[in-house]
Length: 240
Image 1 (cartoon, rainbow, N blue to C red):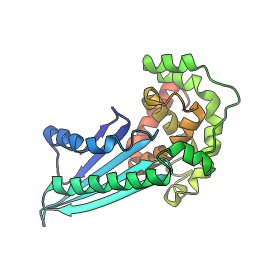
Image 2 (cartoon, rainbow, N blue to C red):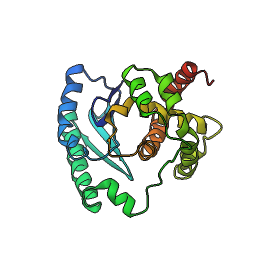
Image 3 (cartoon, rainbow, N blue to C red):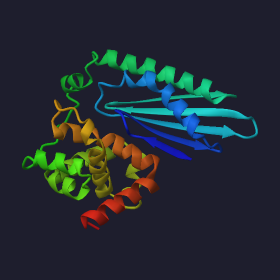
């Protein structure tokens, strides 16, 4: 089973194998993650992937977590006869490592990335209509949102080309299973979903660039589901 929570700054994707979580267990897992929400609050992007395996023969739970932040992915894992202790230890390690990462960045992630020269701003040929973008999000109109954000399409495409080399498993699939245009669409789909969460002090181009990495990871983690979403989006916009 798979569960996704995108209601807060910490985006959660929960997947389980050989074990079906009840709604009550999902709620309990979400409450357990409350201790992680505050440490990642200052990051413009924070995507948490949780995978739970149940081993029928040993009756053990194996928990793996992967927290995607700008410039860093933090992974943890644990094994226990009971689910919650394993997950709790994973979360505790995540909180500790997020604190260490923020300390390295001086608790100002974006400022530190600028200082290190790792931020490459996405600059469009012309500025989009901000009011049009906001109205499209409010009205849940992806077609209009995509039209308003079109000036960023080519700059995003160029930035994605530089990111592909960082993911050999993605590079092997380009032009076969996944196309660069798929990643572009995934970025805009994520931007559409998360636009209300965009920090106003961060320029739109910078924010879109920050969505490239988690968008690639989503495509690699759940290719069938994400490619289906992308295909549907293209049907709406008439770009297929």
